[in-house]
Image (cartoon, rainbow, N blue to C red; front, side, top):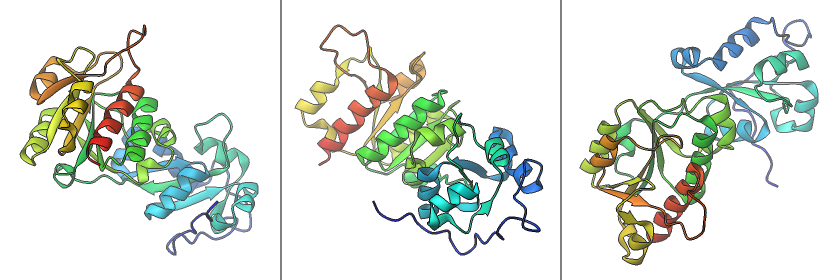
Length: 274
């Protein structure tokens, strides 16, 4: 296993806080960091929390860590993070959102890129009105694995910096470009203007994914638009796409869940482009 990255030079917290004591839940810097569990505060500050060694390591590699907190035992287990700020178990638990925290939480700068910067990429995933953070984070992770170059959170989508979404992405939030745009039609228009083929994934599509694969149609720059698992894509977004594509079901299952369907579509395009 490769060694974990070291803290950047600008993260230089004094050991054991003030006077050699561990930070507690009432320490002002812990209180300020805890506020980032709320979307309002994340939006206002442009910062968010990343929890656990995998996410922290990815955030450090991306150069977005502002401050790192860890329990003494966690910092001892991960020598590369030794210059993080030691905090009490209670302070760490107040920052963590998991039942069994792994002892490390980093305050990070948000990593959004402008829509115009990602619109011309070869393979893009668009999450339109997807509200479940677990699904969104899993699709981010899948997109990263498939070589997707950007993920756009569109419409009334979940905050990509929601704690559950960050954890479900397993570090991929820091390696795939992420853009946000409230208007899904602006996203589709920007993609189309950049020469990208926009495909809407729907169980009721008039084109089968198999047809596109067999015809070699997925070799061109493509954006896949995915909707919420409960409601799918609104009819207006379906109509705005260049094509509406269904994943074929060969067995008796009624449908695939959202993350599985996204994996099938994104890997089909990744294979077609290679």
